[in-house]
View (tube, rainbow, N blue to C red):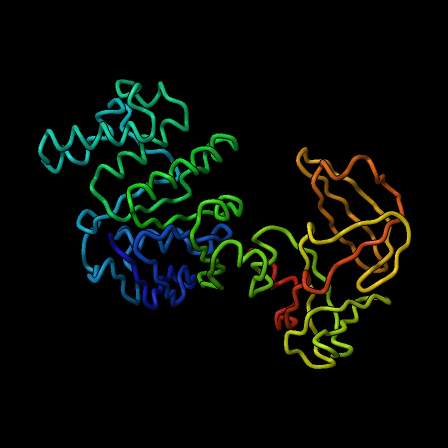
Amino acid sequence: MPDVRLLEITKRYGDVVAADRVTIEIRDREYVTFLGPSGCGKTTILKIVAGILRQDEGDVYIGNRLVNDVPTEDRGVGYVFQNIVLFPHMNVWDNVTYGPRVRAWDLSKTRKLAQEMLEMVRLNVRSNAHPQELSGGMQQKTAVSRALTSGADLLLLDEPFASLDAHVRRELRQEVRRLIKDLGLTAIHVTHDQEEAMTISDRIVVMKKGRVLEEGKPRELYLKPATIFTANFLGEANFMEGKIANVHGGLSEVEVAGNLTMKVQNASFGVGESVVLAVRPEFVSVEKGERHGVNTVLGRITEIESMGWQVRREIRLDNENMVVSTAASDEAGRFSTGSRVTIKITPENLLLYSYPKEGLRAALALE
C-alpha cells in the first residue's frame, strides 16, 4: 500500500494562492484528514494528488513514484466526491463493477471483489436497486464501493458525507473508516467538519489560506493546539488578551482586562509580553456563590442553552464573557439566568500564546 509525499506544492489562480508550498507526508495505511474552512485549499490539494489538477510548483509522490505527469487513471487512486456521483441508469451492481469492467478485468475476479465489497457495506441485498431507489447513505456507500473496486490502494474522499443528515453522517463515517482499515488502505479525507475530523482521523492537517498551520493526532490538536486558529476552529475556546505580570515557580501570572489575574503554566514568556489565554468551555468549573483560590473569578450567568446532551452557559465576568459547558446529567437545574457564580480554571487547562502580530480577530478569522 502506498504512502504519499507532497513537496512544496503551490497552486495559483491569478492572484489567489490556493496552495502555498504545502509539504506533508501521509504514511502507508494512515487515515489523514485535511481540515479547514471553505476556500482554504484542502480540496485543491486532494485534486492535485488525484491528478485532476496540475500544481504550478512542487512534486507529488505516490509510493516511491513521482506522479507529476501521470494521468489520474494510472495513479492507483479511488476518488469519492462530495456530491454523490452514480450512473442513474445502472443498478448498484453495475455501478460498483463499472471500473473492473471497463478495464476488462477477469469476470470471476470482478464478481468476487464486488460481492465482497457489497457484503462489507451491507448492500448485497440491494444490488439490483437503482440510485433513485436508495437512501442518501446507501448511495454514498455505493460510491465508496465503486471507488474501492477499482483496485485503488489510495482512497481520496472529498467531503463525502456533507450532503447527508447528521445521524446518517455519523453512522456512515465510522463504517467507511472501518472498511478502509480492514482493507489496509491509505486514505486522505477532506472536510470542514471538526467533529468528523476528530472521530475518523489518525492524523489531522489543519489548513488556512492555502497553508498548513499544524498537524497532529486529534487528541493532541484538541488539548494542546500550537496555534490560536486551531484552538478556535477545532472545537470551541474562550480567549482573553493580557500581559505577563510575573513569572514564578513555573507559573506565569497574566493580567487580563480589569482586575482579573490568571496563573498559567509557564511557556517561556517574559514579563511585559502581550499574550492570549485560551481555555476550552468544558475545562471551566462553576460553583454557586463566591469562592476564593487560584484562578477563581466571580461572575453572573447571562444565558443558558440546553443542547440535550450538554448545557452551555454564558457568564459575564468583570470585562470578559466566558462560555462554560457541562454534561446535561451534571446540571440538575442548579443554575438559572442571573445567578452569581464563581468560575475556576486550573493552570494546566489554560493555553498561552504570543499575541498575534495581525491582531486576535484576524488570527481567528476563517478567511
